[in-house]
Length: 193
Image 1 (spheres, rainbow, N blue to C red):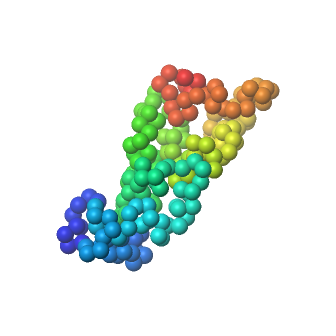
Image 2: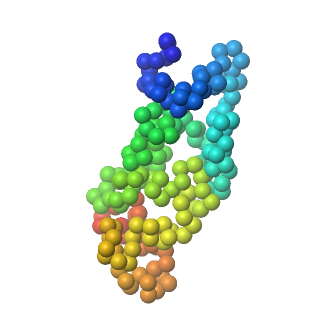
């Protein structure tokens, strides 16, 4: 750390979860026997990370996932392994989701009409960040069930109430058939277009 303490990448190492859990530099780096020449890693990503983070390895084995094992995304694209002031060593807060927008720029906004959970909770309000058994890495198998976690048929909730005609027809069984811009819209308050 005498040489690396001042760079932005290593600035938070002393308070990182790796340091707190006695994971030293040489657990991941080797000056003499590096298998991966870039950054002198003892193993290539993601195998290096999966050595300890077995739960994440399981997530990336799910049918819908970020393509980490194929090398299209790396763990360090989203996490700063040397330390971060954010939870889970994220490179940005969940509400900012800069790590997501790096690849999914069309979802970033700003939008004239924002979907509140996207703005306040971030992508993980609806999506599993590593992988899911549901399409688009959603937390629920049915989109309506996900929407109904916030939107109700009563006017008492904080979220906008769903008009009662939604219960009267099969055509309203998938919210995103009509509300197509669920991440936000520049044209319609109800996220129709």
